[in-house]
Length: 342
Image 1: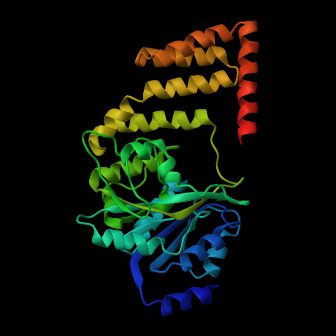
Image 2: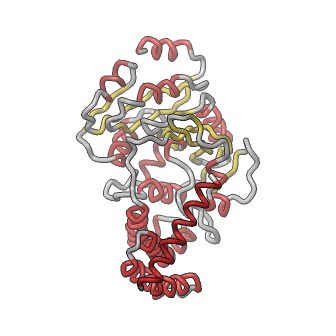
Image 3: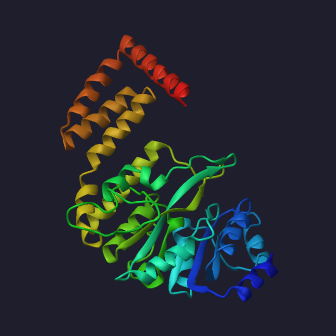
């Protein structure tokens, strides 16, 4: 395969000034397929860097056998690995790719063309589809299906290049609606905004791209040029853990609001009530009614809404014996209806 990579670069008439950065931790299971999707690009990248983040499997050996640059480091997490690769990159542009995701062959060609045609320096991201061992999970546009993207971009025809830029009126990134594996950015811009925050336990991608949006606009390529793989070896987080990570993001934004788009600052600083409400819902579904009630009451103190008032009344009712069994029966009925619908 190393010979194939070398031959590919020698015979490719068009090589983009792009460095592909692939953070990899115990990624031996998928890395060869991921790299094959990079080798298959119709517009070849100038270099491919695999950052081996302290793997204990054959990740580094596989990458070396396939002829790409390998940087080995002690395990420090995905943000540290991405930053290591960005700093080491020699291309004017950096394309991020997680070690288990796949690119469609035209991905770099479409994005480089879009960036070259942009009126001002920009970064780019694309639509994506999700798949697992059984094949594609959906044929829909995952990005277009995301409520946050629909709020940001109202009408975007398939195949279009849509400019998405920060504004004082509407949040540009109300929740993360694209994936880092779809992003291509100028290396200088990534370094100028400080790279990924290595101290954040989660939401580090949203925090980084908020800072990048503050510096430059983005071009959304409305084609599913990324295939996002779901598998059992992925790091997974309980919904409550994800929401607690959002509090960390809100705290980071509150510490230095000038680093982020102003509309997004207002959005995230006002989001605490909603997160407390969602945590209350998660706890109620687990039958933890006292914890849920405390979360709902915290949400209500921050922002009064009828939804939270109703949730408090329902949770207080569910704490007694009869109410609890009614709640559990209703939850079982909803699950059965979802199963039948699916």
